[in-house]
Length: 238
Image (cartoon, rainbow, N blue to C red; front, side, top):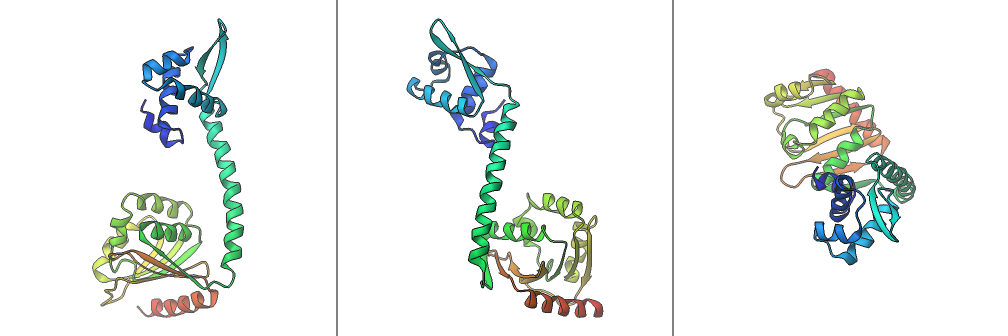
């Protein structure tokens, strides 16, 4: 087993190495662990203590000396569940702070890939959306080439409805992309812009992924609904 898998779950490299070693060869003392893993003995004790606190290591006394054992790997789930509950509490507290700070705030600007991912996550929490220009350029597919298949799966699972006005040259690509989704697509001749408009959840997102990706999020129901009305008028005419 690779230590990286445990590192991805939140352990340090040395915690992962010691845990795996104790799974393979239980009942070891700090000295043997230090020698096998080439970790300074003075560090071994602290690392073992941290693993004990996580519930991943236990010990017994033999000949007045501590020998250590790895706990059942299912204990990793308990550790992750505790982190999840703590994270949910922190998120709730932070959201309260964020709601307080957003009062009276009209718009925010997000830049880079992380900013665009934030926009997509917001969109996936809505029931429906209207996008004009999406697909006029398809750089967003390259920007999120690893993430977008998962986003599409979630969009389909949640049965999010959408209407998309795109360019003739990209219609086939968009139809293929959303072929399993409840997203309807129409084309507008001469649509060739790098800027896109999406209305969802009483919000208006103005975004582009050309060169330096950005999203301007306007959190105003009247603005979003006005643009949605214009979109619908255009949709019915094409």
